Image: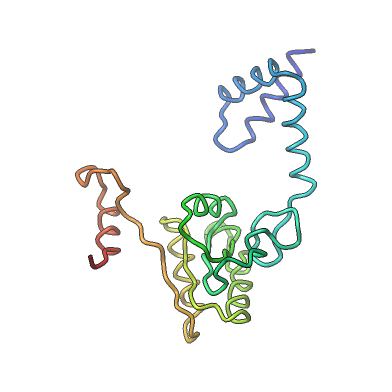
Length: 197
């Protein structure tokens, strides 16, 4: 009976991204040895997020209100919108404490082979938002992979003929790395994104 319960927990934990069977087993036995109040707090947090989490009506970030904290913040630059693929991307950018504008979450990236077309993303909402709010700059921060590049190019084309400036985040060599270990694509992107000193 007990082994069936643990096996069930292990199977459920393997549904999480990046969690294989061995990690799920370690987590299951860790949870089993946790104080009951801590384990129940985790269960409660999961339950709460499933009940209360929703997408912001403006930017599609995850929030528990109609409009997220970032969109409500009067101190932020409302003339700049950074476009990201997923809500988790916002956390990474916010940790850098460099960007003070607003965000727009696409909830994915274009992938015709997987059936993800522009209509399935929040691109139309982005175009409407930019036009309605007099945005000066759209910063595209999609991932530097094939899907991210296709998405960035599509968004760029959506603003052809509009007076908004569309930029793409630079990417290439990370700080602290050695050029000799960089692959050709990373090095070429670093050279493309060079700027005057």
